[in-house]
Picture 1 (tube, rainbow, N blue to C red):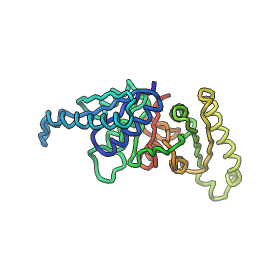
Picture 2: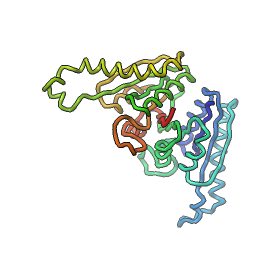
Picture 3: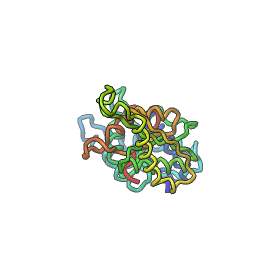
Picture 4: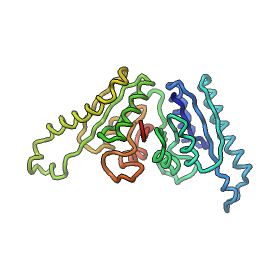
Length: 283
């Protein structure tokens, strides 16, 4: 119950992810596992990194993160793992044992200015359950509220449950956002669409209520605020997330290509959200 795995590589974004993961573990009354992965194949590459140096660097990064957690959260049950392999693959493989995988949006590699690195994106796209991606802003200790995107899809249902469960741990409220857009030609004022905005808002609101009704009885202690917005989903979620603890979103929505691991909204939030993003692949 509440167990969390966080990827560690010694970078500044990683430390923000560790801090966020530790807070979540405390609220969930579960354990925290810090995992550093190093690739032994680098010892055979053109750069010729000695394998023992790679191991020492990995152990040092894990130890620093472990010491930081024990200093600031002395009562937290902390485990430290140092393993070899591909960072994304190992986080995903070990992540099956945990409720949540937490990663920093970027690690030591990548280009300056990138909002999300390849490891974070791969883990967010293929996690077995929930993955929390912590960006440069981190998660302020005074932040509150969980924002969740709802669109009636199976993945959005997973995000609703994730948001309600997380809010229950924190004693937070949930802001459920349903964004809708009329057909392109409706803005021209032609045809029947010119007079249906109010009716459409009511219809979309009823759809949001129907989704929430399936889950609210399981979380009677959580206050839920409903927000029906005419506009683009990503913009609506970012607007709602000012000062929020995190945004929960399904890996995919009702639109887009079926074979994509991440839909357009999840992809955009990973690059532009003002707070950590919780991507839900299952309930």
